[in-house]
Length: 111
Image (cartoon, rainbow, N blue to C red; front, side, top):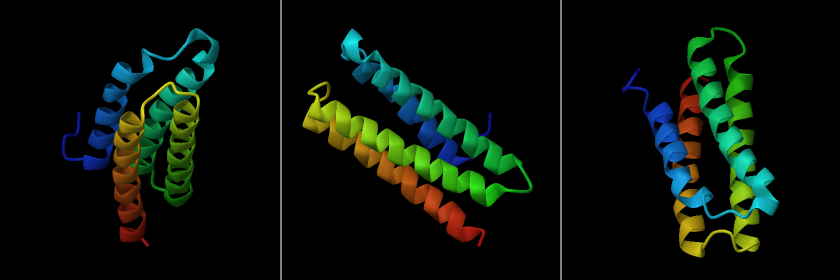
């Protein structure tokens, strides 16, 4: 689609990288697995919506920040339940931090 939209590309790469880690989640906590996936897709959808919509952009961008915080929490929960390793946690948190910084830059650029 639009390869110049770096924030969307970063989120897409993040979503694609989830498959390798989410396969290890037990069936009893499939809800957390689904929430990580669904919230990640919602984040991508909101970023595209904020990029294409004329009004209410700022609120949508702040909603994106809350989605990032929720994904971060889901990964911390997964680590505490020993579903992911510390190395995986750090990798995904680093990627989320990068996305968060890009989103903050986008918000500050339009103020």
